[in-house]
Length: 117
Image 1: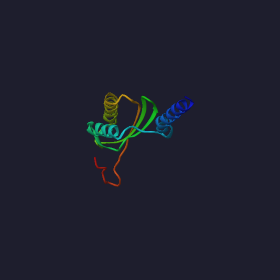
Image 2: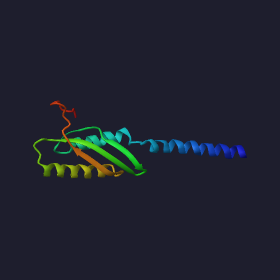
Image 3: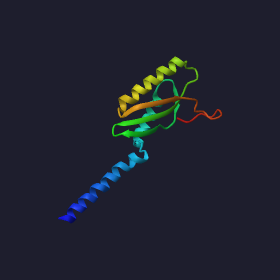
Image 4: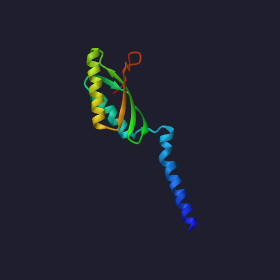
């Protein structure tokens, strides 16, 4: 009887270690979701390119998303702002687990070479 209880406790401990390890070291979302977010960003009108997003779980259903986006040069600041708002809305619709979305509008080109999309 004691051996059975001991085995049960060890099994529960191993399960909890497995589940919480990723949260303790900063687990991100699955690669499929990262690809989906990047594709959503690149499909947004006004976006020239987007780097692969960075994510971090803060809780079971609370994920932070950081995304570097290169917008077309001819867009005004108001158009960039509208594109960012539309992109955030599209990401939240497709992936409601992203509670905090940080989009950095920047030039992803390196010395005139564009980032491939």
